Image 1 (cartoon, rainbow, N blue to C red):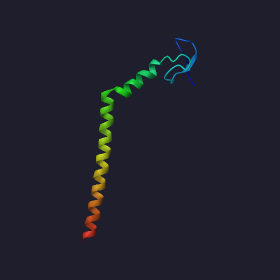
Image 2: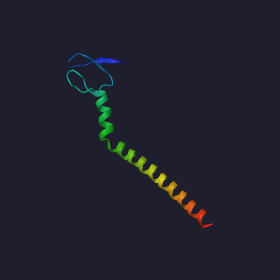
Image 3: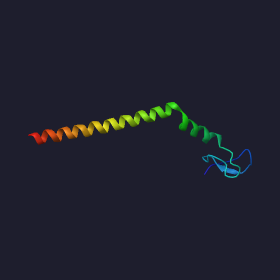
Image 4: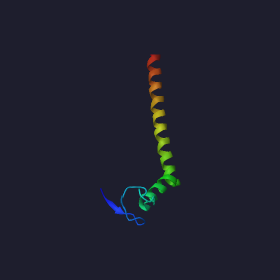
Length: 75
């Protein structure tokens, strides 16, 4: 595991830790990624768009299956 020294209290913390366990100081590299992922509008929009596409594909497939079943029952 890679560690680094906290600039404030000089204790070793993990590089991937969001904050120092001893003094609570945020780890700026992890925090920047977290903030970008959490509040970036473009990230949220792309996530919503992919979710809408997945739902629309599933609905289309279900509709086609129901249509095939109805056609089979008519004959």
